Length: 464
Image 1 (cartoon, helix red, strand yellow):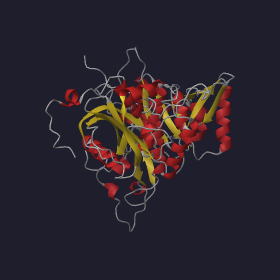
Image 2 (cartoon, rainbow, N blue to C red):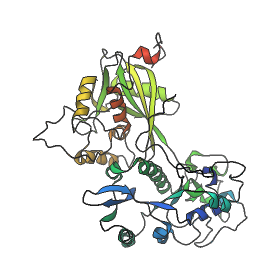
Image 3 (tube, helix red, strand yellow):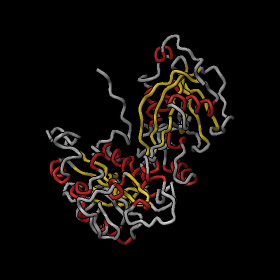
Image 4 (cartoon, rainbow, N blue to C red):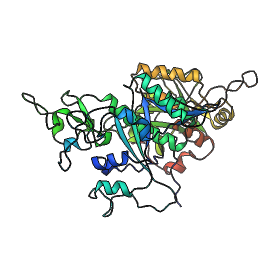
């Protein structure tokens, strides 16, 4: 039996996204009104979380439509016309107004969480249930929990406080709500919550950042339930006198749809399989090492990017590039793609090419096992985390590939230095894909000798 690929934290998207129904105004408005519908709220990129008890273990808050209705503005929520409260005339087809939202905060339809272990009518394109079906009938037929994301960043603080206090008052006495820094808060999310959060945060961020059309500079507005941004010059009532047509009037354009920027995360193993190459980025806290990482560039395959990045950062030639798994990284919208590759550990390591690393070194399996066995060996403290956060502020919200590779705050108790000596260095926890690559290699699940994985007699002449 073929083994399933490892599912990383923030991955494993659990929702049926119903992408073919995103353009249907009747369907979306009907689903929105369902008593089962849940909402994920964001304020300046921070999710609304709930906490219970003195431990303050946080969960992703999931509110009902009545609880957040005041934020949505005048109806309709989707299919809005020129003025607030105006609706697109039913039966009138206009691509520029498909599930349009021109007024109020950003709203994104995330998808449907279908019940497990229960026979339900599958929400897949078919003759019975497809884009050709009456959307209202489709909404009535589905079973499960619809999820939406809502951006309340522009809502005044008093209104925000009122919603959190009212929501908390309807739950247990020790339940509290707050907007929390996402990386630390998500450390206690379930796998389900983390995956929903990853989709929601990336989509809300994309909607909030792209206010103007890259093609002509005009304001944009939302269609397809937050999954497409259109140029306002395309609106039926737009006055385009004396203007050149916007390039987005024809064809498909990547700036109209959400972006995902891939980053290669690379665990380099020596030919014997007993050593791993780790680097210390100059942005890392002291004593912290991780796998190498870098953004893909145009005209590259994943394998090309792995070979180029390792050469640029460490002066090392690699071969035998093998895929491990991927991890969504919603800071703001990256896909971390994990790989193993092989190299000759007897060759010199150089960090003077692009000067991104201050150090890189080969570590033995026993060294890494000792680090992983240490209570603080794969744990980032909140103080160390702040250094990563300062780095992101300097880069205008776009995580560097290195800090994203390493970063995830663990919520385990801090060991007492009086009882336990600090580890020689630290590595990422397994909530980051770099930590998974390191641990899987150390425990023998990946990364045997190079001949076994790359094929005996494979030529290296084609490598960079």
